[in-house]
Amino acid sequence: MNRFIQPYRVLVLGLLLTLALAACGGGGTGGAATSAPVSGGAATTAPVEQPTAAELPTAAEQPTAAEQPTTAEQPTAAEQPTAGTAGGTTGTIKVGSKDFTEEFIVAEIYAQLLENAGFTVERKLNLGGTPIAHAALIAGDIDLYPEYTSTGLQTVLKNTDRFTDTNKIIETVRKGYEDQFKLTWLDPSPFNDSNTFVTTKAVADQYSLKTFSDLAAKASDLRLGGPAEFPDRDDNKAMDKIYGGFIGKFKEFKQLGTGSLRYDALKNGDVDVIVGFGTDGRIKADADVVLQDDQGGYPIYNIAPVVRQDTLTANPTIADILNKVAPMLTDDVMSGLNFEVDGPDAKEPAAVAKEFLDKSGLMK
Image 1 (cartoon, helix red, strand yellow):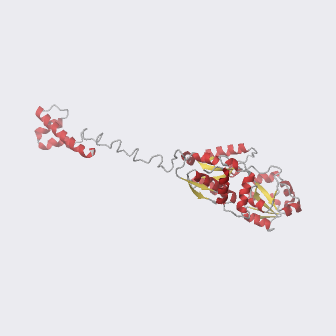
Image 2 (tube, helix red, strand yellow):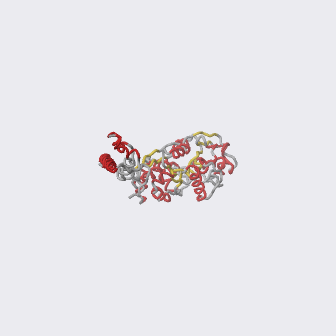
Image 3 (cartoon, helix red, strand yellow):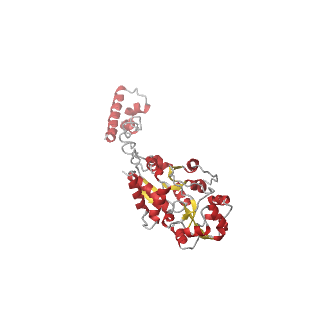
């Protein structure tokens, strides 16, 4: 209302001042104003029409503090899409995963824990391999996904150092990711899902296979199944040197995808040995034999959530929520969860994750 009344108040005051000056014969500080009454009626309106100090929108005519869109009218911190509330449950958290069973299960565990804490979660699972998932994280297409420490070390950071200390590995990847990508590694789980070689009991007995050294000695008699990039991966090249360069000496190498395809090929006799992961559920399901890395050729692969720093800043409770589950995922637990999905019951990863969390005591 003040903004509508004010111009009329200014007009009245201007007219009164003009009449007073005319009665006194001048004496004002502005020559134009003092001569106005002498020169005619039109000039008497000049002080009102000119942008004098009284007419400039400096105080009463400007929006007051209540009218400024700076507090009540502007979005509050709770209304901002990226800001975190005291409980850390603002916005939608996009959880991704790579393209195999273990990743699906762990990503579901993370997603369900966050939902239980009040977050809205969008799942973007089965993205593909590490390069795709990592690129999605950097681009902001996802906010977090489970990754393996030595994969981050070697595949992403291109660090060829051979660490046998799990603490040294996580310290190195954590610093590298923060410095280069503004990404943060939360606490890793203790299970080690390292590469390994898997065979059937019949083949193991026939060729006396118990260790990687045994496999290296008999490679020329055996057919190996694994991913297309297997011979060229940095971790495999390093391991291969330790065992005398046997990877290129297999009787045959068949390119097989991840998960069930390899185990089906092994079970059907299409190959004699396959590249596997230490916690694969099909190992238990098929009663296969895992060969021992007796020379320590492969690095340690612990899993952990990798999270965008801006997501953590906006929602700091994410770290506490996900760090609580980390120590519960041991070798036995993870292989058991994988078995529930890849074994004869063929459960869905989301259902397996829920069963685990219901028993964990972490769900409210």
